[in-house]
Length: 143
Image 1 (cartoon, rainbow, N blue to C red):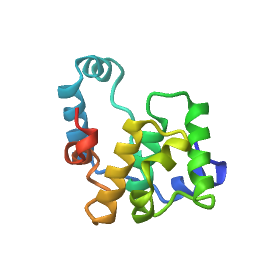
Image 2: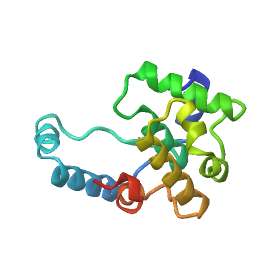
Image 3: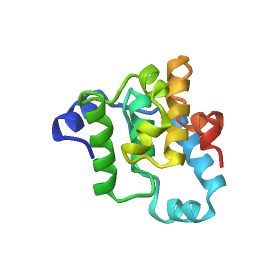
Image 4: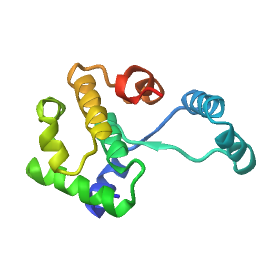
């Protein structure tokens, strides 16, 4: 989804989740979504590869959520372009005004989500193995 160099770097820094974490994730998904539970039963669980940077992973997940890959890449490029070609540190993203992010193409919901993720990361509360819990702890990401 990113540049080939960034994707290679992310793959080189990736770590596999332990079996218990994957089993917990599958149980969680099956409980939350009956359709997905049926797909998991029929197709089997996917191989999960996580990067060691949950902040980057979550921000990119929000940027690409419910839009085409092309649109997601365009928003990501504008966001990175605004911050000198890189995803900004959490403190800087958290301090970025909503109007600025809106001008870069983020919807109101995406702005709430990235601000929540950035605030959580800036507070040191974002952990690489907390992917399941992040959706329970970030106010704007709760269902």
